[in-house]
Length: 303
Ligand code: RIB
Ligand code: CA
Image (cartoon, rainbow, N blue to C red; front, side):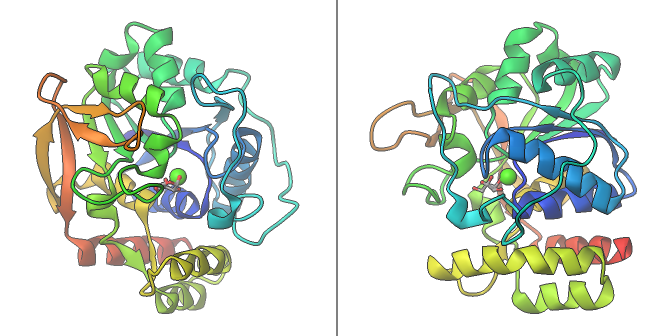
């Protein structure tokens, strides 16, 4: 499977990227950076840093810096840290971004691999919406779009109604869900069931000192945040679960419905069922034991 990850690394993004590289059925042909957990310039720097660390030979194209209609954006750095990777600071510039912006890169790759490309979007959906607008053929060229985002029956994590990737650009998200793309939505209904614990990260560090040790290092900040909001049994692997939905949809339980994203009011960013919209697959459950053990086993393979 040819895969592009659209990402705002991001601690759980880092684990998802390592997992994607480790999974034998994935050929990770590129990453596109988006604002979200950090500023987009930091997202692209972090993606290139992670690619170098993990051994990923794929371009990184930098995308949108702002949500649709916004003149500024401030990341919530208390979740993923000052530079997006926990307490690590002064993350070095390694290599350089692709000459194309993210939307152009996505459109070019979708055309070059028409019908064979999966995109896993694990940040706000601005780059995907830009690509839909940029190339009328993009939506049909992409075989599958798997989104980490939304909350169908589950409460939100930014507000009682809205999940972070969706609310951070509700307008762009609605463009995506109004499109005819083959969409799988992996939201909090499923991802809040797949947590890794401090003991899991100790195991990763012990069995895979380099990559596992890095993931343990950056997870401390993330575990502390979730502990501070009452999630005391670990930290959710939101983005890594979306990667597993790309390769093993049979491990998930889906419902189908159209999705409309609330654009204003108390529930802005909510992912609402709407039968007038093209139906998407909405993950409501997964084999959580299989998912977390697969994440662990694959990252341990990386050493
Ligand atoms: O709500 C969880 C999502 O927001 C994840 O993608 C996490 O990395 C943050 O971007
Ligand atoms: Ca993310």
